[in-house]
Picture 1: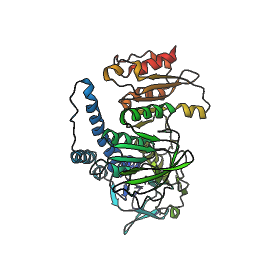
Picture 2: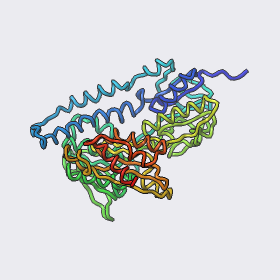
Picture 3: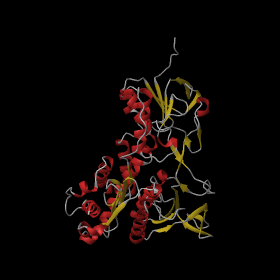
Picture 4: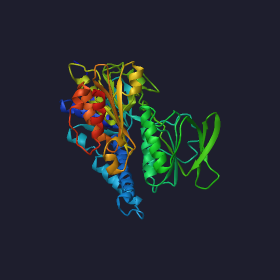
Length: 457
């Protein structure tokens, strides 16, 4: 007689990956338990993505109102109430289901609060309980990583989520890191009137995107907000300044050690996978960079899969949800499916926003794919005149067979435009097919038509 388990599947973590895995398994008739060490819904729902989106909605609206003066709107005395802004952010987060177990309870999934720790390959401890299952999905996410910056504990430094929860915007802020999170926060605080500085180790902001993206956003930030952007800059230490209420940032740039001062420091330095759940007791291989998984998201222990940020790869809410679904499907199904990230987009929620689908030019170069490209600036269409906004472009890449393989958009509401190009890439459409598609005149989507037409000639 086989061993009796408490559950068919135990999921550890209730973020996008864990939620997706648990719901897929429950829908398939599995008896599922889910364990959460923090707030239900994970950091994405409670402290990062959803709260940030609500905050950015406010700041972008404020900036548009300020810009309205050129169209005849009297905005010189425009003010805002920041406690009301914070209340709105909390309301929006609650509406999204933050901190709630309802979605799991409705699916008859057993919920346990507390840190999970493997006791054996088939058992985990949660507080004073021991739960067992023949299958597991680990989706523990990631936590902020400070790197080798000294003084973080003694100076007044904020995480990105803490920065969005301050009782009032700081007069000045130094943001460490110019990846998507750092750039979004820089845009946010600048729109509120804060003087912003960014320090980035690489040669430009958003270094994982093509160079045109960093260049145009740098131009926009410096021109519009007088933002100071320090690239090729290594942050060495942070400490309290001799000036009351000020913090000092010590950095190395151009072979010299210098410093800057601001009222707040925000660490947007990246994240580190959460793996402190005694994985060695389950025989699972991992290191500080994440849990090892194969193309099917299976660990070296065949009954344990992992998904989301804890595997240490580039991730997003969309990818984590997909990985959670795939992990659960592979665990409970007869046939296994390899992960395939074709068709996923990246979004950076600045204003103008940045959206990327398929391959970038940098990735094509690394893969030695011969391409043709078209980069069309916003100034090429009438919307640039009617909105008086010209910072951005649409870039399309095609391969030697004229198939669309990549696209990048920097434009107001780029997230609404990228879907068309993503669909074209996913379905291996020819550039001529996109060029022959009509687009709304006097809209930003004309940029896609012009870019496609240029390549189809």
